[in-house]
Length: 261
Image 1 (cartoon, rainbow, N blue to C red):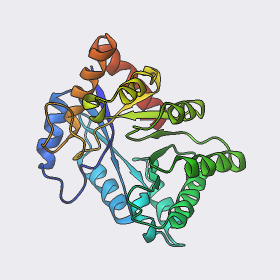
Image 2 (cartoon, rainbow, N blue to C red):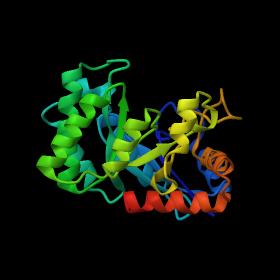
Image 3 (tube, rainbow, N blue to C red):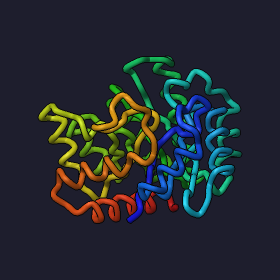
């Protein structure tokens, strides 16, 4: 059995667990591939360097580069060129995380929209998948997404940490996107949230931790790390009445298919 953490931030300078221990724990829990996700230009550089310096046959590390909506105010006319340079490295497997977040509004809405459009065009030009972060902004997001598809062709990607409505789930699935499932799925209680998670087809799920955030049930209050993908997979298997091996096999295959890893 092997598992993949499709979205984490273990490259962060302030990550609370030593890298060697993180990777050892991952190996011990059958997590053999990990994607480190950039949130701004410097963090994207750090994600790629971390993957280069720490990847091994037992712990294959990859990177995604992009400007998170919270950091959209840092987006300049030079940003796309810098991201394109980073994306030329074979360890960069996606653009992201990018999107819209109107919950905190750390960057102005129009600035977020501009950054999203530019980065979607980059992903299309490079034929790379996208890691999407969308929160309380789906009307604007789908308009931009559909416009970019119409003008530039298909967009492949994953809705990272998806927790929204069944309608938006179905729109994402109809658009060919995968759904990122993390520790949140292990502790939701509201009937509509439980129903939404149970409605995601297994062949469209990518497992992720978003480490060090969103630790699953049993690890709440502690820093999250890639090894906990196994707990998320186990919870998913139990809720669907499936063998853990099947959940691991199918979700890992989904992740490999999207990111070509």
